[in-house]
Length: 277
Length: 182
Image (cartoon, rainbow over all chains, first blue to last red; front, side):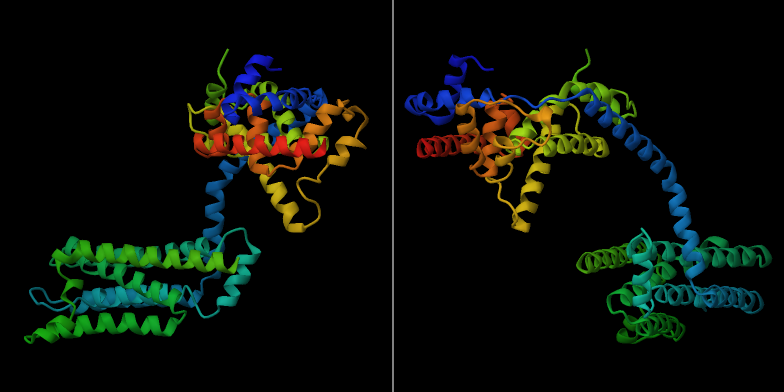
């Protein structure tokens, strides 16, 4: 218990008046005499036991974390439509094959692989957030993972699949056609693929309209390919051909735009998730 | 002897046995604080003291060494009390000032909990129970836990000036309530 003099000093400090402090000192002394409740040994042992269990669970949880991510990826692998994998693989294989057969060096035309791969990836990504929104919510309700994590897992799976397939095709082409350089070929499709996919994903999530986001990706990419091939002289047509999708100087901007689109999509999803909750 | 802060840092690094030392050091006093904050509810204060330590362990990564561990622990306990009273207010079942006053004065929940208190203590605890929670927190931490103002500010996450004003207003109100009851 605090000594009366010290208690008085504290009270004077806190009340700002000697008179108020004097009036309260007996009350504060009485308050300090309020006995402490007993803390039994059993109670402390019970707490230590709980803490030990909690600590064990948290260590096990950390070990499970990486396994859990793997389990989510596995579960989404089964949920993504099989036709989507097959269509992507087929289009990229065809693109590789046609490029192999028809590629002409020293021309300014797009290699068929470069035409097909970005748009195929964008279609795949747009279909991740399908109109079957209710079904997704059901899945979300039934699993400990939120919709954000589910979509991130799907995006990772589909985009990686397209990336690996196109990369494989490019390596094959570089190995079999000596006039094709691997580096420039990869750069020709990689950034447009990333950009178009992120835009398609953003639109399908925000507008909840998969066909519209697929159509938008198709229009952007077709306009770029066709108008570039036409070698426009008019400024307006040149601008419509979106040369930035191909030029080396605009690559960093494309990457930043893709990252921003992705970030916006996830922020939107998180907000919707919170509102739903 | 290792400081609380060093022990907490040890727990962050995986030395979980250090928890036992912190429990031995703080459990009893923390339970006393919660007992006062819940107006003498023994069972509730025991539950909350246990929950405080469990939460401290779950969130140990949030503890910032070398800030005072005791203030961090009491902040968790204070949040639990606030949450409890907020829920009670929402349910409109029992008010903070009414809560457990009867437990304290009439029927203690367990035989070992029957704590004999003097009439003067009874009066002041009754008056204390009628204060708003934020004033009660400041008074209990200052006059029972004997914490310095800076530490109280850390527990309540408010500036020191606000602690002073809460103490000043709270003590004035306490005096009025005691005069009214007299």
